[in-house]
Length: 114
Length: 114
Image (cartoon, rainbow over all chains, first blue to last red):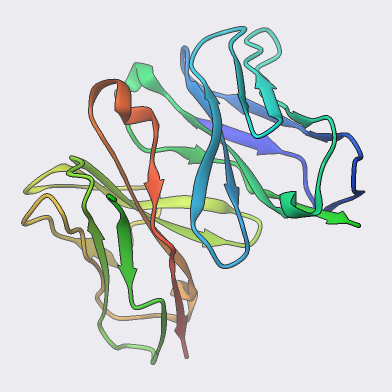
């Protein structure tokens, strides 16, 4: 079945540091890939997505590239801010099966210190 | 603005009681989902619906039920609450066609079963 594996946290960085959160997946065919962000006390919000190989999703300075050859979708940001402190979830939707629900990774907590 | 709401936001109940969590969306989306969030597991799919009168079991459906009598609402019922069902519950919805990929999440319900 489908699965998503992401690096365990928490990840603690200083402001303006470079961020990478690793995500790899197992899925049938060509899934759509997503990063969602959850701020404290809130629901999940879509951060970015990519729907085919070599696509780069980007939003709010975050980027992730769909790498089919390595089945990865790593999240990166060049300079993090305190306001980026949140839990980040990698997810996929396997389009080949007609499934509309998402399969999530376990989440990575990011803490950015001033 | 369209939104998705959940109620109550917090609930404490006792083992064996029936509990219903409400989910209401004004996006006019056909697809609705219930997930539970537990530390170390990310979000796991409980039930989902692709339209009125359509309901389906997800990966962790035991002890839960849903009904879909209109487009806007998908209430989640715990038939006989158990301590293992202590969790944070999220409702989500998505549209059709190319909009299927983007899911919109409610703020969550924190349920404690004593």
